Length: 441
Image (cartoon, rainbow, N blue to C red):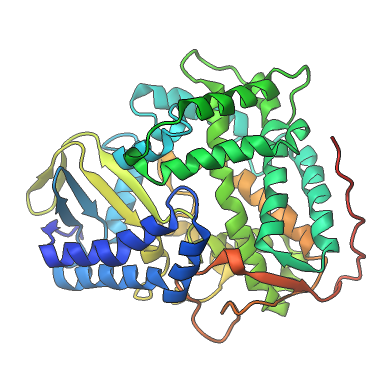
């Protein structure tokens, strides 16, 4: 049954901001700040945020809670029913082009589909789906992508100790090859430009726009489209019809940005498997289970800390409450993904929920969003991460850092992926590590 909207008092608003918003802003909502991530993990700040939301639910009930601040009203969702309504009506009563999200992403992708409002969004969404082969399980170029991933995995297997720095650098080479083609493998400047602008995006509208950097980023992207034989998704872009307002380069920039959350989930999935020999053995033998491990990692530690929507029209809620267009709606991912009142597996690693339909049936578990705004690159990201982990699981990894990722006790709500270290202990599948790939120009 739908629950009434209530207005939070000032003390609860202050608590929510202090325990929920501030730690997330400090970590960086667009690109993570490693020192802040480490501090947040040490304090387990996501647990603070979840407790503050539990307090709202206990005080006001399961209905949405209206948080009023000067110049902006925000509706915090606390029930699965309201989550399903908002995500299901995105594109109608609600838009993914939320004001704060648009302010952040406009630093580097002002015409990306995610922050495109109105009729133009439908055209851009169709283009994205066509170029990314959504919702096909595998992209038309999956064999080319698979070979690139295998090549980049080889040095990681030969290194003995795996750190976030090594893993992330390899994943970035993979992303450049998938998005722009093999010619971009060593184009670290394009990644540097993207990340500088993402750092600006962490400050939303408070940071000035660096138009010269954005132009350089877009010019470098266009060069890969203009090659005689474009590779990667650039080739798919050239093969996909586009209306005048689609702006394919801007959509490619969105893929390049959105892909960067993928290595966090993949690396943490490897860390979870490192402490679970039976699950690691199953993941080596079962591709679907391995993809479920990646999804489960992203359920446990969502890379999108919150899903944001704005109302596009007046919306009517139980109790006779009407909210004006332009009201922000907030879905706190970790709160719903770790709701122990509903989920018996809330704080443990249970990939089976992605195989037996439990997670897919629950709209409040949304690592790639849901409804019309679901990420059209979902299957490509899962393919990329699972293919890389397939190669890395040739070795028997063990945790060599102090992370609490093993079985036997609840997993922390906040984790620092940047200090996670793994050590290779051998090859349980008796497959020797492939030779180290040579760098190519």
